[in-house]
Length: 99
Image 1 (spheres, helix red, strand yellow):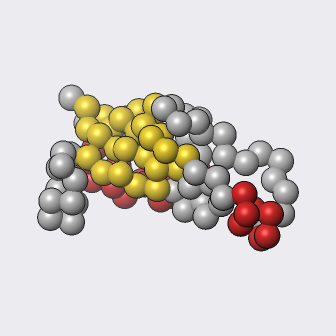
Image 2 (cartoon, helix red, strand yellow):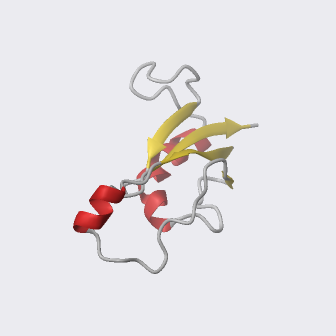
C-alpha cells in the first residue's frame, strides 16, 4: 500500500538557530504543502534522509495495512502526524494510506 506524505507545517526557530547552530549550506529544503509518496514503505526520491528516520516506522506500518497508533490518537486511524527531529526547523508530516 502506498503512503502519501504531506508536509503540513514547517517551523523555524531563529532564536535557537542564532544561539546554538553553526551556519548550514543546505538547511531543510522541504516546503509546506509538498507531497511525497512512499511505495512499499520505501523512502521517496528527494525526501530528507533525516526526516525519514523520524517517520519511517510509521510509514512502514501504514504501508502494511496497519494503523490505529496509540489506541485512537488520530481521527483517521490509517494516518499519523509525525514531526522530523530537527529542533531548529521541524517539519510536521501527515502520513496517509492510499489505495
